[in-house]
Image 1 (cartoon, rainbow, N blue to C red):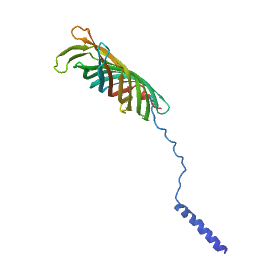
Image 2: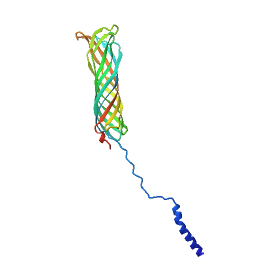
Image 3: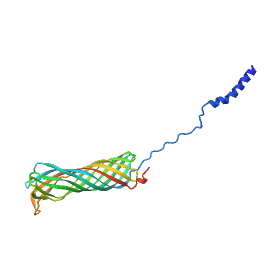
Image 4: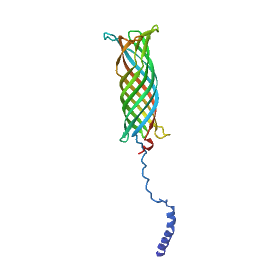
Length: 255
């Protein structure tokens, strides 16, 4: 019996290394690497921009006589291209919100007709320039894409108009002078990093502007004297603009 127990022990001792070799190796215990923080950008800073776009203007016109009576409304307008330059500054707060102030100037060429209701007169009118100042509130959809809304104050300059008879095409011997209209605007757009050059972005924006009604005297073309009648207009302008934006601080804007 003792010999059998001794033989069994020796056999088990000899088989142990072979059994251990067949067991899977767990290897050294290692810790998981720490999570990598995502790369973000700080939109705080200033910029300049330039580009162009296309615009439409509409106006409701009324003729007012010497007695103060007005005619029925006539609606017409125009369209055309424009160039724009501007600049502004932004401040990022929280993780995703951006608040900024800006200003821009448009070199415009929007052309259309203006009618003198009740007098069978029509003339060519042109928006020659516009400027705006305002504020915008944005939200970063991704660290490098900003969507925003904006609003503010604007003025638009329209050329003088020489009127002619709609039926015969002859001179109407009447005109109105150039005038600057004041009003407000609202808009919405997005801006994103082009990626191939630090600080270079592309912006696309829709903007709607409403201008106050102004009444302009109708003048005699030959003498410049007032005819006693006047033309009142309610103007609105809609634009789509695309611009290149260069941000001063973008190369060092990571956080």
